[in-house]
Length: 86
Image (cartoon, rainbow, N blue to C red; front, side, top):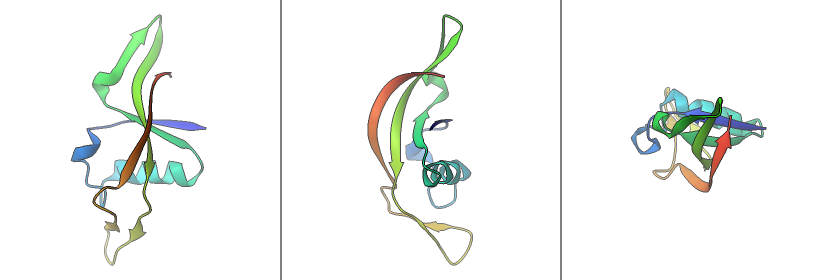
C-alpha cells in the first residue's frame, strides 16, 4: 500500500513535534510506502487527480522525555520521484 501526504515543504516541518511527520511515521511503520507532495504539485488531468510526488523513507526516531521525538537533523531520505494518479 502507498500513502500520499500533501503537506508544506518538508524542510519547514519540525520533525520532533509536527503531526504530519507523525502520520508519515505511522504509515511507514504499518508497511506503507510514503509519498509526499505540496499542494502546487497536484493537477487534474482527464478528471483524475495527478500528483508530482517524492517517495521518502523516514529515519528512526524515539520518544523523548517530553512530548517531542528525538530525531536526526536529516530525518528522511528521498528515494524516488514519480507522477502518481490518485
